[in-house]
Length: 155
Image (tube, rainbow, N blue to C red; front, side, top):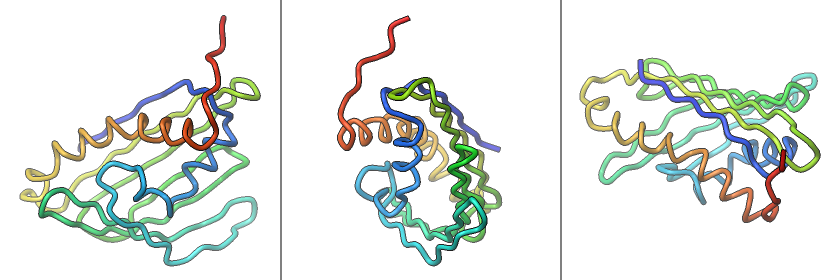
């Protein structure tokens, strides 16, 4: 099963990065391959918020839409997307936001997935792998654009 994970130390607070990743409606503006994202439903669940979202990814002539349940848990500093429907057999994605100080944090991103179809896997597998490798950069650049650039922590 394909998977990818990364951890980045960023010049933005954990709260800022959480808010940026939680703002899923904005993904088509900057996330690689994301053509469209529609929130079907949103509801509070104790200290968490649950979203049901349809994301359309596109590459050349291929377009696929899939549905996920997104659990926004600000208190735990996590955002998890769990697969519900679409072209995958399995998809699980988690973000973790850990404060370093008031202006810096560590952001972890991991995803593992498997397409239902071997044909789609052959067509999209390498493209998805490349896109996931660009995800962290895309979110960090978006944070810089929204919040400004903060100097690195010197140790």
